[in-house]
Length: 355
Image (cartoon, rainbow, N blue to C red; front, top):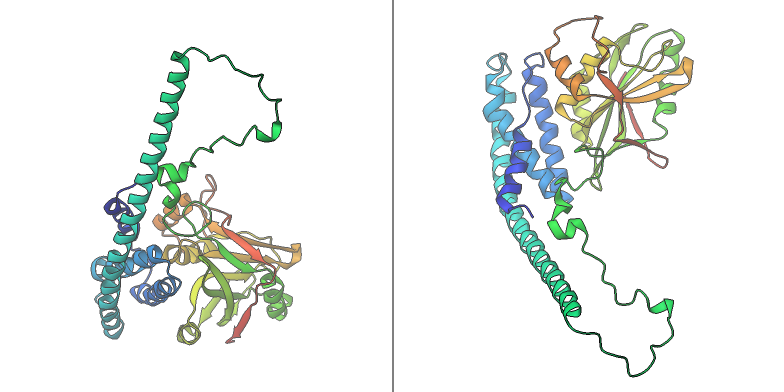
């Protein structure tokens, strides 16, 4: 099993492994920091200490170390920077408190795994010794004929081998207390999302204009659950959609204690895919939250698809400075269907229409 300090270092390296993109404004980072702290507190409430530790640490690293190196940091609003520095004190003290709890938890788990491994090794050694003794000693003649074979007793004395996770302490390999794809948490979408959104976009679709919305939610049972849809003020064309009124959007998020989990938009006459503009829009979402998704509704083709950027897509788009519609390489693919996103038939959806 992994040593407690090693497990903690692994969590910290996860908190540190992100880069600040100069194309994304400082205000956007500071705003995402508010949501990062909100999500960390959600994890704390649900006792998902490892996830909480990573996010509190990540926030502090972003504000104290990485963001001051952003070329736009000096010009960013002073009140936002001041609020972030104040939140940093909370983040650091919470991270330190959780660190002590985690070290105690990891030490107990390590001791348990070690004791189980030693017991399993002793049992194996005893079994080998008993087998060797059988081979050395001459067989004893039975004084009576053996009882008739009974299949029912055949497995009564067998001992199941310890599972790999018990034996080697591998049960914590994901260290995120979540199930999903790779290291991504599962993202749960209400099954009604596509139909509800298309109804709200109906008049725009009829006029061949795109509509977009923001997917918001919270942490539930270790997964991320989309529960709310925010439709900001916007203006659309046949192949683009521009939003405004950011403060109103933030007001909804703050009032209902929500975090941003992705976005949704229509392609009135095209198929479901991500255009070059869509890819750059989604890049900022996914850099803030690796699980963030882009849902595309293509009513003309009766298709709704949920996409995510591939790792190659993240790297490639982070280096691309193209504006508007511009060509990208297609292989390897920059985006794919989001395997970590699932539909919940009973999932409810609250709509906040700010248009």
